[in-house]
Length: 187
Image (cartoon, rainbow, N blue to C red; front, side, top):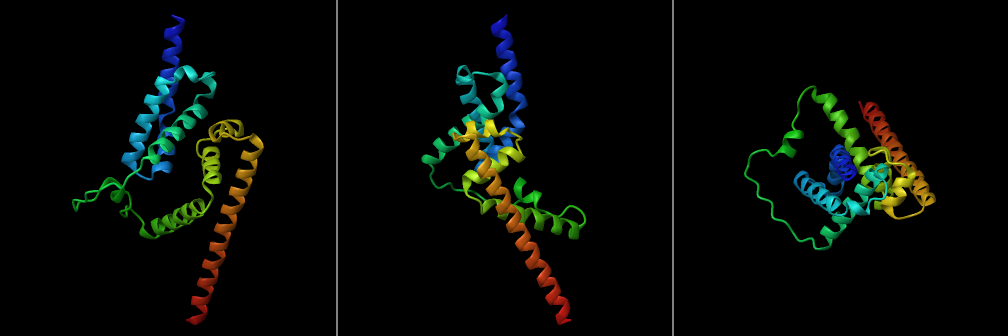
């Protein structure tokens, strides 16, 4: 009975972590279908390796470590993919179509684009640490396990990442304000 309970508990916890794994997979792959494939491969690997998990309470960080490993192994053999476009809007393209107040959507997208650009400009390890902390809400210790580094290194990466994103967004905001001021002066 005890073994059945542990297996059920593992499976239940694994299922509850799927949304977080999907978010992480989307960040890594930048493609919905590739993200789904990565999550599936991660779940298969996690089930195969569940004996490696020492504490069920650390499942989230362990799963992200497994996912990162699966992803890195898959990109080592990465080849060019052919994407067929049939002229109709895909699910991704549909997300970008206007839905309501166009001005509000443009401002929202602009902020998202600037934020995404600021995140993309970060070194990969800084960006990963920041997203694992702020989006997946992993502890510093869990991030250290995922990234295979000391907790102090995680603290440093997070501090530098936050500062770099803040500086980039502040710089762009100042440039935008300056541009608006210039256009008003020309009128």
